[in-house]
Image (cartoon, rainbow, N blue to C red; front, top):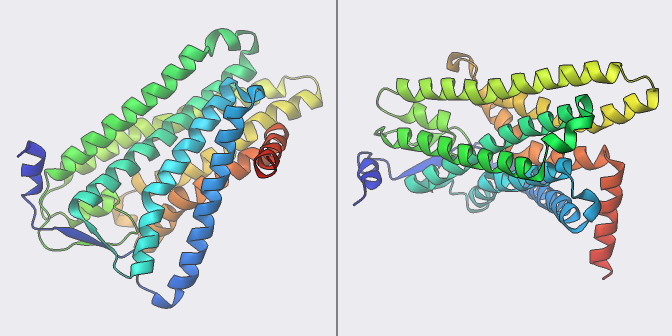
Length: 315
């Protein structure tokens, strides 16, 4: 038996109950239809962006390389939580095994961390493109861009592993009801019957380093970008420069706003319904909005997506 399985045997809990949306049975059919529509739209929208970028040589640039990776991460992030919600609502049995809960938590931590890092990378890409245009090709080489993305994957996987290893050290004795629709690490820590100070301290420190530092870097990047845009003499040039950043700013505000609110605010101020609403935002709504925000703000991409759909439908 591995050391990991030995740790799991310390708990008396074999499964958890995801309370999530099980408190109002009358609304569940409507909720299921709504979530299914959102999920399918999310999958189709992000897949179309990936397919369009990969199949069109015009979009084989640094910015679209990062955008295709963001769409891939959104697909994975949404698929980590939403299908389980479907099963819970459809079967009326919102339970998940202990191991399954750990896997879901691990995947969620991995993909949410990846989105945080990738949004930071995308802001740096826009900073170099607008503030240092003469050096853009020299700085943002294909090798460097690939290195940034691969490093983000490695770091996200590593941090998710650390959180998971720390969690399995804790015993879970009686209460197995999670007031969420997925296995959130914060909700799991509250169910442990031992001291979780180390886990919470690591979340706060690691969260501060990843989320807050990333957000500060993005903020500084856009302050410098804003200053550079102001100095552009022509109104057309200002509009063009701003349009390349506005989509990314919208996504950053939505994603970081909810993440910081949930994970870096004091736990004594949290309200279960508020946590649930925030979780729906960054696991369901944001992956849905990303393809619309980027495509609607980008005429070239919007036109290419339309052509891709026509080509696939009438081939």
